[in-house]
Image 1 (cartoon, one colour):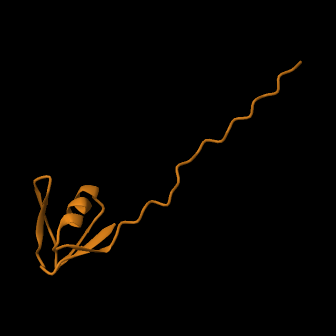
Image 2: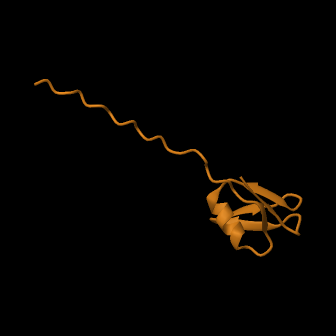
Image 3: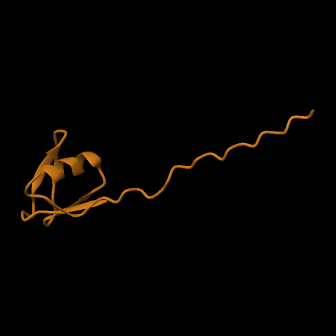
Length: 70
């Protein structure tokens, strides 16, 4: 989750035509579109950037072939 601050307690911005508003000068989100917009705004400062997922995708184990009988 990313957290942003603004010197304006009720700072308002728009993402895809929808209104978003800071509360008490703070805003937290996990939405990538919101983060992208907030990163471009001079009146919004990121104080806690989103953490990259540390989970690694599972790699299927290699199957062992049965030995052929001769």
